[in-house]
Image 1 (cartoon, one colour):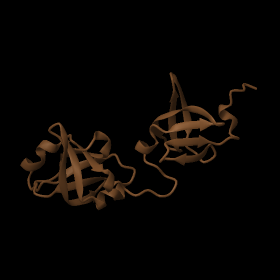
Image 2: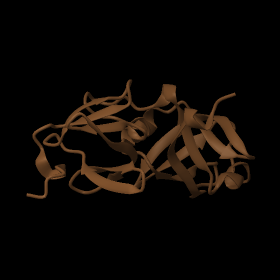
Image 3: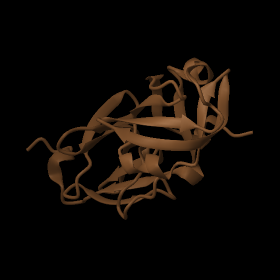
Image 4: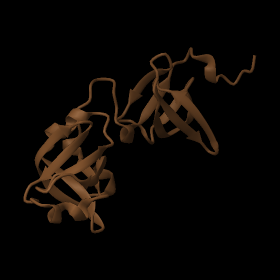
Amino acid sequence: MRNLEDYYLIAEIVSVFSEDGYVKLRSYSDFPDRFFLLEKIYIDIYNGKRLFFVEDIEWVEDFFILKLKNFDSVDHVDFLVGSKIYVDAGSLYPLENETHYVHDLVGCKVFFNDKFFGKIEDVMHLSSNDVYLVKEGEEERLIPAISELVESININDKVVYLKQDFDEFSDDEN
C-alpha cells in the first residue's frame, strides 16, 4: 500500500463534458504537456486513491478533457465530478536541470553564512519568480527563488544554500 506522499496532485474533475464519458479537468500542473503523456492516473474516491487508465485526452478551447478506459457514458463518470486526480512518482513530468518540484523543496533546510536559517514550508508562485516561505520557530521569512540569492540546492540532502555575499538578510542593521 502506498503512502499519501507517493501521490502528486495534477488536476481536478470539474464536470462531465460529453455523453460518451469525457470529463472536463482543472489543471494544477505547471506542465500542460504532461497530460498528453498520461497512461494511468489515480482518482481520490471512496476514501482512497483508485487506479484508472487513460483512453484519451484532448485540449479543447482552454481546458483538457479526459476519457477513461471502460467509462463510456455520463452515468459512468458523473460520480467522479469534484474528485482530484493524482499521479505516482513514476509518472511525474521530467524536469529540466536546476528545476525542482515543490514537494521536493518543502522541508529543505536553508543555510545563510553557514548558519541555519530555517526550513522551507511552502513555495509561492508569483508572476516574476517563485518565493520560498522559510520558517524557523515562529519567525517566517520570504526568500525570492532567484539565482542572485540561491547558491545551490541539494534535493538528496534536503539542503538549500544562500549566497554568502547577499547581505539582504544580514543581522547588521547598519
